Image (cartoon, rainbow, N blue to C red; front, top):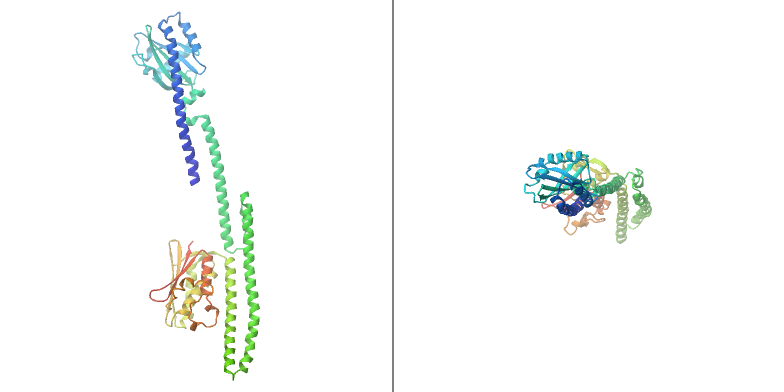
Length: 479
């Protein structure tokens, strides 16, 4: 819109300036032509004062000598005692024209009302820019009428220009009809159309880039490339770099998965050996309290190390999944209802209640498996902190183009100093007395929640409730 406004405003501003300059030029031309008509009239005064049938031929020859190639002069006479426009008669003209032509032109000037402008006093120069069509079918511009009084009557020297001439056309026609203006306008329109076409073509190519990026972000491998979708030659090299970047991202995701599997397998083997080797040691040191205590600590550390390996593998797999996450339109309300219904049944055995509320439908662009993991981790995290008889509340709402999912529990909450760090890797605010071996206690559950939510353009925040417990809020753009 800004580009269109510039293309409209610039020619208007330039045209107004040029039109003002052209108006000044036209005024100067009119003044010069009127002055020339006045000079011709004054030059004819001696002949007109002594006009007779014998001097009529001299009047025509004098006009021919005085008139230039572009100006037309016609001399009219209103005999003494005559009145009104019908009393004027052509006496001479330059360039010379047939008598019948002059009669027809006189009638046209009478019909147009030009002759009616002459005053009875016959002593005032009447500037005029009347436009009329002469008997030959050409347009003429009447520039001035100079009255001269003599004994024969009232003489009028009329000065006119043909609009087919350059000077006459510049005076008679509006400025926008000037050939140079029309040529400039044609060139400018061609330039504007070319620039707008280039702009919209580039805009369309960039929208194709955005659509391709959304497809790739959705994890649809092999669904096309940037270069294949690019119609602008200047963007081909950029598109190829994007394709190379996407390929490297997919390779990185695969490498993370393979590394996670290989590392987990490599660590599990020596850990398993240590765990199996502890059994005979524990039996052998039964009577040695100190040695038995050491063996127990080794067993606890081994169990914890195994949990850490599993947690690290889970985090690496989560990172790889987010690179290749298959995003698509989905109904978040259905997913919340299904997950909460399942947890309500399983947590009832532990004395916990799950209450949930959702609209009929809330559609977002995300991956159902990834969001299901988000809901599972939030509900399980709330369940581990909620006291017996506690309630976990899950509420989904849609407002202002955003889907808001809130999970509340009746637990102890989180220390304010840790509240802004609970979504970090390996961050856990669980008391040491509750820290049973297992990956859920290593602070990766909420990290995965944050990872999955932000991967699909969402955001997650947490705060302590005034009445006790923790509130976690997730927001997604709706579609």
